Image 1 (cartoon, rainbow, N blue to C red):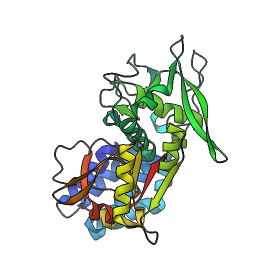
Image 2: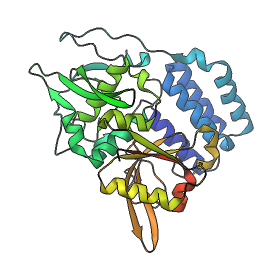
Image 3: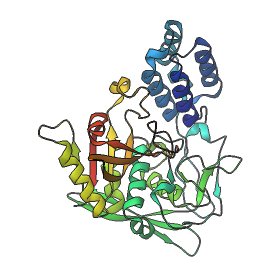
Image 4: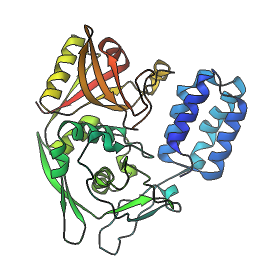
Amino acid sequence: MGLDLKRLRTDFATIAKDGKITDTDVDGLLRRVKRDGLTESEAKTLKKETARYKDQFTPEGAKKIDAFIANKLRAATVLDDPTPVNPLGVKDPAVLKADLKRLRQTDLKGVLVKGGIDGNDVTQKYLADCYLIAAMAATARANPELIEKAFKKRSDGTYDVTIYEQKGAKWVPTKVHIDADLPHNDWYHLQYASARDEKELWPALLEKAFAAKAGSYTAIEGGVPGDALSALTGKPTTMIDFQERGVKADQVFEALSLAVKERRPATASTYGESSNAKYTNSGLYSDHAYSVWGTETSGGKKYVQLRNPWGESEPANNGRDDGIFKMELGEFMKMYANVEINGG
């Protein structure tokens, strides 16, 4: 992969704290891009982070990076490539083309579940599928049994994974056959979704099943959290759009609290890239999906607890940087665009 997306996001955030991104920073970034190339998801991230911090660039730096995005980014971007059928006769979903020379897909000999299924196991890495990872974490948090039941191991070590697909008004279970080969680098670190302990394989294998069903890993970049929730649970999902007339904060809080009580997963999404300025230095990110972790009433105030699928990066003063944080209800309603609640 040309750029480490998590490092790229962190670098932008760190530099922005000083109030400026220097021309030297821009020159270094563009050298790396031209040298290594970009995958489609990396190109999207570069554009997103540039827009987010546009006010932090010098005029010359802004001119350089805007010109590159407008005129040369396409030439630096690579597409996916097909992956051959492996010896077990199972076709692995194609990794990003830029990853083909950097990664291997082999069985890392881990275990499906280690110490029980936990929503905080799940970590998004270098794939733009926050909607899916947030839904996976929320489902594992609310009802871990659903995740465990989704896997059936065959005698040859491969898996049948149950994913639901919509047919009319119903969500119908389908079986996706995968093996335990997972994309990893030369240091045996997983490239896409993983558990915090990479020897626990269920997050990576579940993401792989979605990619296998869709045809490639790139095919699952970008999506709707509510659809992912339904694909995991087989139950419909309802969206509450905060911009709709009559939607009140207390009603949203009550709906989320009831979902938590009834062990129904939910997600919350921020506004799109056109609202980048809204999130500058907030610890939140535009066009990003989060898992709803819980609700809380304390000191006469109502709070919504959330988790960033990166497993890190959160608003300040929320304890250790594990991606889990809480927001006062009014602030939550201001910074988020909607919630999607499964079941009910």
